[in-house]
Image 1 (cartoon, rainbow, N blue to C red):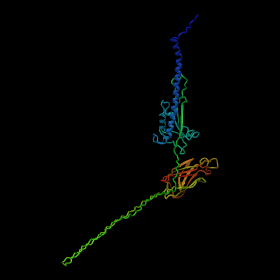
Image 2: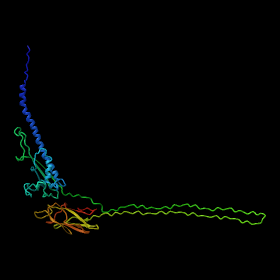
Image 3: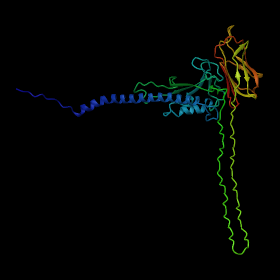
Length: 387
């Protein structure tokens, strides 16, 4: 005897109960995906905004405030705000500071002028520009932009997403830094000191061509001989005399025009001696072999600033003055280099002269970093470089 298996069918009420149990789990999963995506987007926005801000502040040129871009506080903040699509931070959340690299001393952004590490300065001023920001001419100053943003969950108690905000002292942070380049030396190879151009000169040589001149040859005319008749009357004989005419010969004489010869005189640059030290001074001689004095634009000097002095605990050397015939600069520079712009019109005289750099202590150790670069206004010889 066969028996049939009866499979009970699901009713609609059972399906609705199962859907009601699964729906909250699906909604929470969907909400978690949306919140995770929003959190990742806010983080990416804040990091990108800090990068755009330091890129604007480190670029060369004049900013929106009529000052260099590294002093244009409003322009730097505007560059960051252009990348903020969800309004995740305000201007007060953007901190603009300057330092001399990781681990260097500087200032606390709460004080100006700086007093506490790790910042050197902070871009505040009147809120738009800060003319007190002065990067180092040695290209060691960095601009740092730190942005703090907020993340608030849409339903904070439904899914355990932690609030990230400035109010809770746990914001989303994005920090970027770039070096500000304000002084770059470009070395150019000087042209050869001797050069003798040669220009070929074309000379025209005339050639005499003979001219054949025809000569007229006279032709003889026959004479009539009288015939005697019975009448003895003499008849005279008429004789014709030929005329000879000479034709003159024309001879042309060519004219030679000389061609000018172009001579170029090369420009000679001054010569210099080696860099040497004596006592507190670093010295270099200059021999101006040109026919006139050469006007100086500026001078860039490098020296062993941290180990140049041999005795005592303080081995640093600070540049105090520069002399070329007379003193052309004075001050205090810690190094390792200094760009010197003479206060007045300074020239390199004709003949031999000496440029002297005076320091606060005796210069005892040369370490091959010593270098002198003199930029000139004279055309044809734009600089003197040693070594």
